[in-house]
Image (tube, rainbow, N blue to C red; front, side):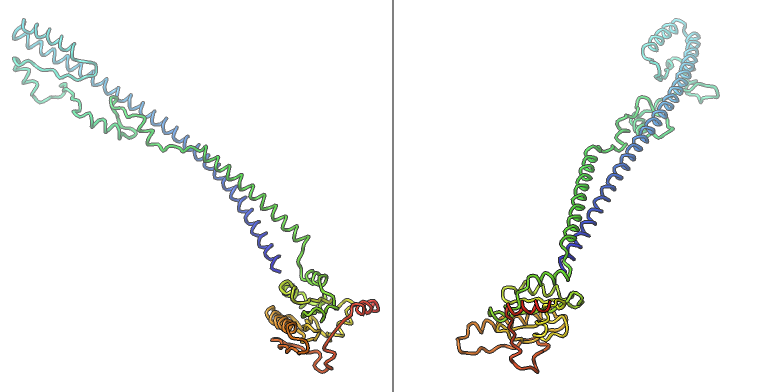
Length: 392
């Protein structure tokens, strides 16, 4: 009974394992598909963000260029006004000196002033009116010089942390490498997909092997069943003949059973284990009560109910009968006593009677009210065969 149960447990485990492997393979494929979709979506979002950033950078550049053009126009207007006022002052004071200064100023302006630079004009020290005009508070309509920021590092830091919609300097344009570094790199999926594919292949192989093993196990159980009835039939076929009782100095267990007996089927696994354990020390005789050839043995052993286990000593004396389902340890202890009695009888000298030890577990004494001679049973092989032929 234990072997079919173990096979069923192994079969269920194999089926659960194969189902788990197939589900894991499907989960892995779904995970790879989802991950690939997310990577494609991430790349698309990055491209959109880059295009958006490029558009915002272009608009900021255009705004900066417009502001620079306005500053250049205001600077040119301021220079022209200042230059005109300077000429007027120089003409009133000293016309020749004014001409020389005008020439020097023009040469300096043409050599030092570049496009886009802001160069403040200095009035000559000999012109008090011009200095007074420069230090005077500006009025509505006056042109005031513009000054650049003294710190270029501040502008660079501001450009590095610029947000969408802010104006950035062209000289401190943020590098594209920093922006690229801010975007998380997408991991390479080549090796990962290969590992997933390899794992999927291994899972499919294991699932296929598990299914084949399960089918093989079912086929073996179908062709080699171990039901209680089959165990009883197998023990009957391997049974010793009845004529061996009391002839080989071994105790004997005579089992009377029938296919329709529920208790017999229940006792079959226990008897099979006992027989496998004591088959070299005890004779086991199995008799089917429905067989017509068994009537002589049924009468000889006084069988009136089954299952009936007759425990016979080494000399053919029926010691006791165990009726109904018997526990394994009870039968084992009785057999150990029978074996010990047979060993003592074989070592006793001729002419001395050996004392038999009583069985620890006794149930029914069929020959209690009968002559002692009937307690000793002997069956000749020829007589058993003749009785079986007459019964037929």
